Image 1 (cartoon, rainbow over the protein chains, first blue to last red):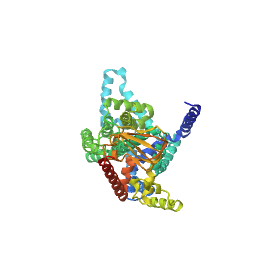
Image 2 (image 1 turned 60 degrees about the vertical axis):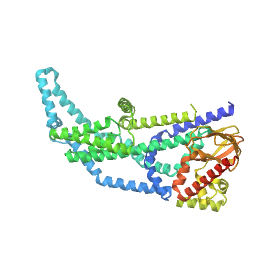
Image 3 (image 1 turned 90 degrees about the vertical axis):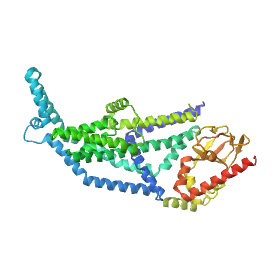
Image 4 (image 1 turned 180 degrees about the horizontal axis):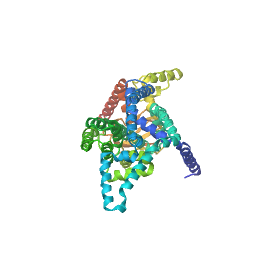
Length: 353
Length: 156
């Protein structure tokens, strides 16, 4: 290898590293924009097929989404805030001490009485006092929520800038999709040109289809859960429905989280215990409908990952970056796995390995 | 579509013969300047050195190659003589495109080579997005295949 080539490669690598360092803060924006663009691409493309210029198609889709969001905000958000506030108020506002208020709830009452009985048998354990202390601590944490919001105003502001920037980035990604694709392919060496085209198409297909499927799944499970819990009479049905829909992204574990939330809400709100069974049955019914009708149609094929791998991935995601990473880790690992598999198959077909 | 027309009009005013060179390829012979501009937007310009391999027998097919300059040697079972040399304004890949999407032969650059690559997905997009253009392209493909069969029949 001659020196000119080595110097050139070093310069290119240095540029890439410097570029990576420089653009690092906006990587999350770019990834979110790509996700957004992948979800909207079929709508934009279908409009383009009908002769609408691509940039107008993007604006039209944006207008429809803005309209839907406005509708959702005016109709649903006040209800959700109301339900959330009620749930918080249950713990926070009362003339009585919180522990007394919580202890008045039937289920908690029975647990407390059981612990008091244990204490009578073995007084040195002091379980009931510890139980009251636990409730007080939990309430204290919840009471600090508004303070947390004030303390983290910078994070909230960056979140707002994130929400505004992502659609702008996505607009350009959607509008100039073809140019970006051509630009990327022009960097690929001749030997890998056709392989790169195949992989680009596969990434488009796999990632796009998977992300859109997840979005549709979240929406359908949210709606089905909200409706089912409303019929059963569980309070805060919409709030629980949306939470269960989002949690459903995590296979195997997500549905249990949704069901646990529904059952817990029945317990906390002091509804009859029979409703707990109805709520669990309603959640089970939603899962049956989802697994047998929605998921096969929307996703096409289920994520074939062993439950143990899913559990390990969720835990690793949680350790790595909290709740958000717990949610995205399984889809992310599945997408990476699918792409590596495609890469392996094509490298074999092109006899490169 | 309106934007594409405006872009094309602007190009025509500035450079009237911009895409006319594409008409030299049998596949694009019937296309009008606007359709040529749409095809041109999908083409990838690639440079190969003499001796460099474009593809090998059995590789998956993902691109048609249109020779702009230089010479290309093609060998494989679809060539009655065993191998053939393709030159400027000829192209390769159409026969395999309508087969099982695998290369039935190998292609190597004989001289320094400049080609325009049209990916299979873009080709499909062009056909499905623009019905008129799609009809013309498919008709040209049929004509090309007809000529190829006649050549084989006559032992050329």
